[in-house]
Amino acid sequence: MPAFLVKGGNILEGEIAVGSSKNAALPALASSLLFRDSPHFLNLPEIEDIKRMNELISSADNQGGVDLEIAKRFRASILAVGPLLARFGKASFPHPGGCVIGARPIDVFINGWEIMGGKLIESGKTEGGNMIYSIEAKESLKGCDYTFKVQSVTGTEGIIMTALLANGQTTLRNCAMEPEIIYLAEFLNNNGADIRGAGTTEIVVTGRAGKLLNAIAPFSVPPDRIEAGTFLILGALAAKSLEIKNINQRELASLFAALGEAGVNIIDTKNGVIVKKPEKINAVNIKTKEYPGFATDLQAPFSILATQASGQSLIHETIFEGRLSYAEDLNRMGAKVALMDPHRALITGPTPLYGRELQSPDLRAGLAYVIAALIAEGESKIGNIYQIDRGYEKIDERLRMIGADIRRIES
Figure 1 (tube, rainbow, N blue to C red):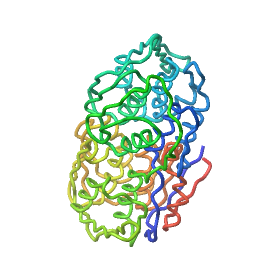
Figure 2: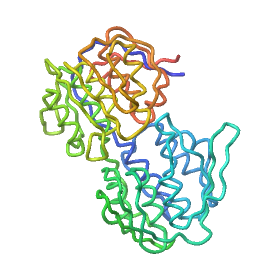
Figure 3: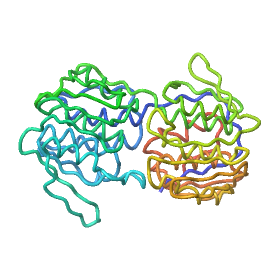
Figure 4: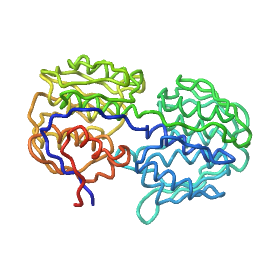
């Protein structure tokens, strides 16, 4: 199995461009099932989750079935189910996987599909213990008034796509407001859909009564705001001068505020921003929230920054269970992380970090381990890097270009 071998302590310098957004590309790809012909996609990132989504769509049949082994491998496979149900009146799918964060409840999807006329007709477990679901709509799906019990990005995207081919109008309330939902709605609208309110908590979808979209306008994948934020944090920890290009600052307002409080100076340039490691990093408390709050996907990288800050930083994770599971590994590296409860960690710094052998628990914590290894003394070996490759394109090659000592090895 491949692993990253990282030698810490190098000063980073130069420029790095933000890659294309995984979280924007995946729902747009899934929506291709709503088209009569094949839409065109520009700037797709070369990452594992995109490969899996393309494989999944290619495996779909006119009975709403997909390759279950592919679907089990990544969380975003759930995004294909709504379009399959809307188009073919049925869909079969496993509980989506991907990582410890990916394996989370899907009731926001199932509840929405059932209100629109779908019926969960079968569920069971395979020999491997994975739950398999089948959902069927004996009559055409009908527009509805549906309120999400919790704001869910993939839930909002999935029900929007389902409603698009339904009969009548669907009003969705308590929707997530992430930019990726806006990108999806704009893409679909440019190709004949009628979706209003994306980016607010109330979205109205006018159903097309089974009429498929025609591919007119392409989808150009925007920059990845989570990757951009991660590079900002890395620069604040290890850069003499790092220019980050292709960054949308508006989408990272909460992170910019937190970094400013930490004493990190960020300078605007013509094509991006320059970030430098400050002489002193101040302790900062963060609390993850739905957009436009502090992104949960930046919580683990920011915790690495907190290990080098002077004082105590409270990290409060409000979105997902299990997102502080990396604390033990950071402590093994020399950090002082005290778990107050499953959702809160108190980090005392600054503390020197030391190289260790680590296993990536999920996509975001995996790259946080890379950041920790880059500022640690000595050598670290990071395994299970498939999780990192799911969301970051050729990250080792790109980090080497700014001075990082990181290489991919077979372990």
